[in-house]
Image (cartoon, rainbow, N blue to C red; front, side, top):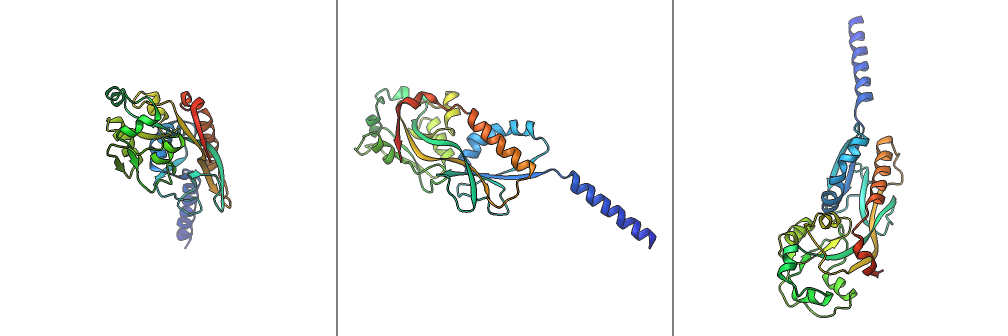
Length: 245
């Protein structure tokens, strides 16, 4: 009996030790495009600041809210109002045309917004909730272009595929700022027209209003807000932005 009690005590001590040394875990959800193009390139910096945090990224184009047990933090697109959630703005939506340098060399006639009607336009099909509701028709109308495209379109249901097609010179896509800004900075894509559409929507970091914020969650929230503030964006477009509510 004494041996049994001793073994039980050892097991209890080992369990307590394991619980105390277990790495804090945090699950973050975001759209595939946001996770791929904005979040993932920056996660190394978070890891350097918080090496003890076991971070899990859940990428899905259907929003996964942090009210579920599976997700602690969600990056959501919208206007910042979700029932049961607390949300903080990271950055506003800004949409502009993008294409490859080679495409623009092959289409020197592309100089104004109206010239887009005679280009191959790359469309993101629904659901677009993770990337915004602006499509080519809305973007062109906001620039005062009322005509119909005369070339065939290419329609894709994944935003990374849309950007891959644009980079490959297949046509002109709509770029969402802070997702495509780095591709512009690297010269993989360019803005053929110095025009942008700014809306009242944006990307927000959100948590459940009833969730307790542990050290890992607090560290991540502070980090991602700081990263968003440090993201300068592709500011050549700021002076030629059309605003939409």
